[in-house]
Structure formats: structure tokens, C-alpha cells
Image (cartoon, rainbow, N blue to C red):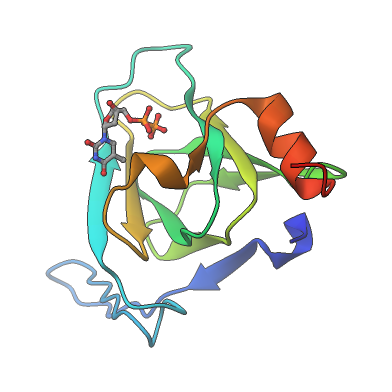
Length: 137
Ligand code: TYD
């Protein structure tokens, strides 16, 4: 897997004088069936989240409110995505190390996930992840 497989997805925007609406449908706007949604909020200044990779899970991360940076790493290359629009999602495939930081005050990070929570799907140690992507594990 490569950081080049991490891509911004643009969701529909239904603009209205009463406010904007963005629908996200699994398998249509997102390239998998959504099995789980969770969100990160009330993040204190300077905090960093994630710091892991997944063996199989695919995700889309959305800055529903405010902004944050997503650092993605495939074991060879790194990229940073500054997320600050509620109609843009960052697709993160399996076997990509990610860290999220630089949360603005009041920001909310929504994660759309391809599977239910399964701790055994995580690499939480960066060296274990590196060994796996280099075919050593
Ligand atoms: P963690 O994976 O460390 O959060 P993040 O990577 O987004 O910073 O998860 C924090 C805790 O929440 C950990 O004990 C596992 C638990 N958790 C669930 O129970 N269900 C979930 O869907 C997620 C994402 C985490």
C-alpha cells in the first residue's frame, strides 16, 4: 500500500439558504460499506490521536467541524493532509500508519470505518508496522 492511495473524496453539497447538507452513502460516496462511525471531539490543544495502522480496516476521515492534520505513512513515504472542509473526506486504506494532530478548538473528526472495532486489526507499534510493510513479519 502507498500513501498515494490516500485520497481526498469530495462529497455532495446541497446548498440551501437554510444551510448546507452533505450526504455520505456507503459504497457510493465511500468505496466500502460503512460498518462503524465514531468521532473524536473535545481534543485538548496540542494533543495527538491515532498513531496506528490497520491490517484490514479502511477508513474515511472528515473534519465535520474545524480542522486538523492527518499524517499518513506507508513505511517509505509520508504525506500530510490538512482537513478543514465538512464535504471532504480522506480515504485511508489498510496498512497505512496515521497520526492526527493540530486540532483546532472545537473541531470534530468523524471516522467512517469498513468494519466493527477489532483490537487485533491494529498495529499500535511503529516498528511492528515497519517490519510488516517490509515483509519481515
Ligand atoms: P484509540 O484507537 O487509541 O483512538 P485513536 O486511535 O482514534 O486516537 O482508541 C481509544 C480507546 O477507545 C481504546 O481503548 C479503544 C476504544 N475504541 C473503541 O472501543 N471502539 C472504537 O470504535 C474505537 C475507535 C476505539
